Image (tube, rainbow, N blue to C red; front, side, top):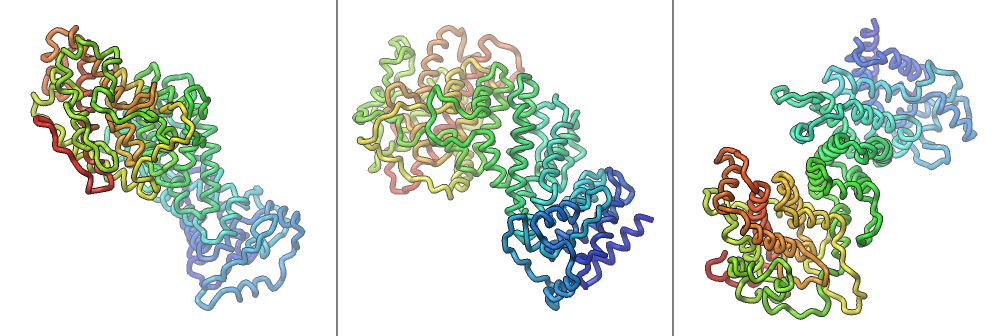
Length: 640
């Protein structure tokens, strides 16, 4: 019988042309009718209930004033009394309301005069009888009904309820949006459900399973059935689907509702629910929560929620960092996790930062890198242009570059005979930069030439696509085209690369002693950074010929010292070339994966060779970044 009643009144309200819902004798029975629905998912009348909510949300979208009538309850009465408004409904309100409607049924816009107690336009014509409604929940019966239907096991019912809620929060009237935020539990209830779904997931989720579950959408929260299943997959898909729905709500909702929803997500979900897991002492909790956060960032699209997520993770401080300062608490923990005793936690956290670097928000790259490069304090003050490559790197003063090392074969290939060619704007020619990276690894440590593999040309092709994508993402940020000129009157300040670059450089300096998967992730993050077209990032990460200030290190100087360490270790590994070639074949699946002595070292050498080719390709596609007239010096004979 309830199904028949729901169907009848849904059709009546949908087909009637005369405005009815503002009448007390109509909207009160509609409120009671909504409360007749099932209180738990699985009600036999779910289909009919969602039809009724569809009609109501459609009417509210056409006339936002109706929102207050549908959600009216005892809290509204209390607010009107506190504001000194009359508690009796004028007899002629219906006639005035009807006159406000034009002949084609389009309602007049409500007046938006402000009042201290709320949205006057929506409350001024509100019925204010003091009778208590059933259960005292009439003020939010439509919201609670929609949220309950969103959790239905029937996918079509849940999807329709989500569409209806989206229709409700996207009302065009600022007064209606304000009423929805201040006088209904809409935003808190949406975020509460998000927190419940997060807590319902098992704590033993594998980060690989989380990363593999891509393409989860609120319109299709369940992954395709033919994919491999794993414990907790259904709960994970439900959580990611609802998070995607929250992100979509924030994008489509009225600004007032979107701001309130973003604030609720930040406070209730990010800070109260997610942060304790990221700061937990349990490695499993850290691992799972970090992987989940990475998956959320991957599908996050709303600019407002992205800003809040960046502030939550990195803080809001934009001043240059100092080695001994106290950064944002969570940011400090994440930096520490990049250099964690657990390699899995380090890899998961580095993936998180790599995902952050791909988001279209300037504050992320500014907080991580750019704020420390402003003013170019990494450049030596008053230093003359280097006369040779040796002067730039100060190889004679480096403990790794001993006479025996230089005699080992590194010298002829790693040091071009000529000083770097420069163009009219002082930038190093692309040929010299590319050759500096390609020739950095000595010949006895190179193996890619012995196998039919994709070489430098493939890296150039891939780097070009990634650079174009990155450039289009940052095009609206107004970055300068050339480095900031050094100001001799500016007081000199000690350079600190920042906590993020410091941990990356530290990890890079240990590439010969770290697991293969960790090395891949470190070099992947550094490659993402090098792609950014900011002149300071380009100069600091990709120009081997800058004259560094005392005590400073750059990416190239870190690589040079790694090569020096490698040349000393090569002497202690018997049959090094053969073993290195075998390890490369194992990594590409061309040889059985038998365990070898010095396997970590050999795998690190392979990664190092490929990383130098990747950096050379990035430098090539980025140069000249803005001026096609840039002069290019011819490559030395025998070099690229």
